Length: 121
Length: 107
Image (cartoon, rainbow over all chains, first blue to last red; front, side, top):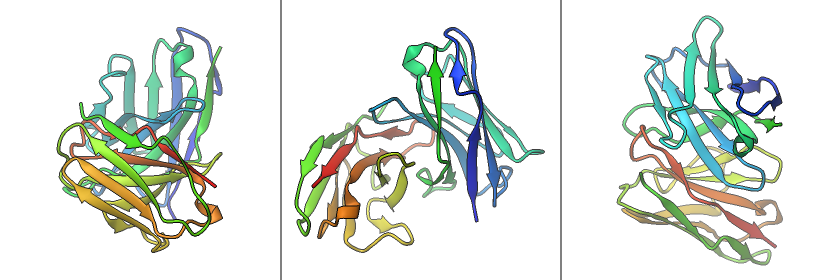
């Protein structure tokens, strides 16, 4: 059974770097069948795609965050990670990790972690 | 980038009502559209992908339709457990995924 679990500091100071990890069980982050993504949700707001990474470590980022975001994969730990630099209060949100099927018909997220709240203060 | 606009932002209905949420893309996305349900305090859950294909385990009262730029999610007979926020998401290109702003369905 696939499970994704986010972890990381719940509190980050302004101007610092937010770092989160998603630990995957029930699938391999090295699989060519999937890609892995981060999505966030500010309090009371909608969903915002942050970026995705696939097995080859090819990444795609939301242009609005691209200069501050890095997503990477650690196949030895079956994890993928998010780093967001120079955070401000606007980056306070619930951060979700999720999995999508790759391939011509993929791109929707069919498995999500429970989310982790990150406060910037 | 492709913008996704959902309407209405809030929808009030009664148990048993037929409910429709719409999603419009700023440019054609073919049929590459998904719908998610988010119950308060929970992670989003995939309901429908590729416009109209129900994810495994999703009740058949949910359905999706549309193509190009205009899409809809319909709940044929609203249940209390369907109270949630519904989001559309386009995936016509992996390099730029976007969500709609959400539609809150309330009783």
